[in-house]
Image (cartoon, rainbow, N blue to C red; front, side, top):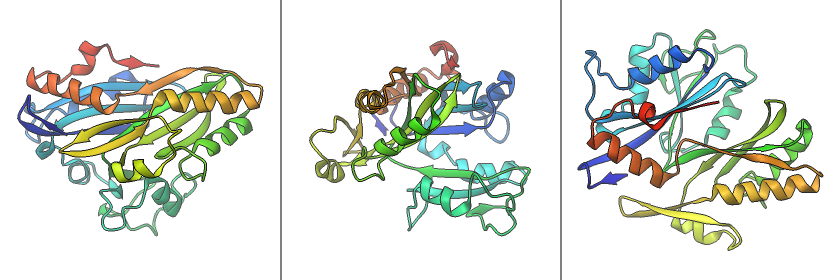
Length: 277
């Protein structure tokens, strides 16, 4: 995203880590994003939000920075011993394989022996460090809808129905169902797509459009995703318990990033009153 307010080309990074219950570790990781290799603060970087989920023991840290300051993949393999990186999306040239494709190819959630895998960057993967994926897209956000049920099979059917890979699903939506706080959560990654793709989808889809460096992109509205989940759940005789947007919509992210970097507020998540669930 280009910002005339701060005279920079900005990018946002969603950093997903497998830790939520030890708040000090999550915050230390977030603060590390603000420092250069000499331990000095970057003036053009801000941590906009921290979303931690105790049930999943997982956190999402939203970082905004000048494009020149975001060398995430290279920094990981340089500074984290044993870190191996697998690329996806626009970072995976020329194939541009999606995160779902890469996870299936790598056996992301099921593999126990990593020795045969060849990373795109970094050392051969070690089980102790797990696998790290680094990707790029115009914009992606997370939208989670909770259904008022403990029936995981119903949740999986609903997730499958809205998934973008389904012929009648929602463009750009990746969805999975998980037990969460005694209910079932439909967890969605919502990816953006360009204008040409937007013109090809049904007019029934409720999309939101935005511009990046003169190019137009769209994404399916979180309100529409919730409405579709509610409709599908009702077919099972199930209600819904609400929606959680993890992080920001593209425009919200741009507004927060411009303000935080213009005012040199690195720990923006603190004045925003970060979300911890």
